[in-house]
Length: 259
Image (cartoon, rainbow, N blue to C red; front, side, top):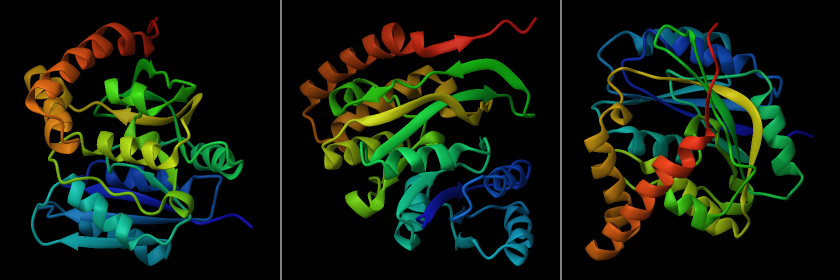
């Protein structure tokens, strides 16, 4: 018998994308799932669109925040409400490919890892391919993940049955990195990265990662606030992070010619 997989989806003003994201879950070849959408105080008609789906499929649940609380609190609410053996993540503007859950659940059921992730491809705001693949490392341990975030959150899944429900601290950004660090540390086993791209990440023009100064600030807070390192230790960790991010991790980004 297949175990239930809980899918966590925070949503904020996502009317242009959320239907496509939900459809990518409905298209999964692995059928035993629940999708928990947490609306984070949207001011557009995202909630009304989601309610149409709920009427058709009772596997889809909706939690509504009365005000904007941020992605960390929204994801944590969904995790706490989840009933699944496994917990996976998909933002309301990203997409999964049809065999994503099936292939990752197979890895977790084999018991070799409690955390699984995969490669993913990038698309633009209108859903067209950017001919870019971010390649997953085949094996990822805690120390490697501490240097830079190698898990695309839209590809990550963990075994809540063995690890318990792992939530993230309430940092405005980069809280997903801390969640995966906690999951791998709790597991005592490295994560397994599937080489096949199993998801599509939408690159948004207003995304935090497009601002390099913010990249430095938020990553510093991961070490200082999220992991409790001293100021000096956090600066040292940031130097290691920058070296890893620009000289090692960058080699995992493969751009294909569009011709």
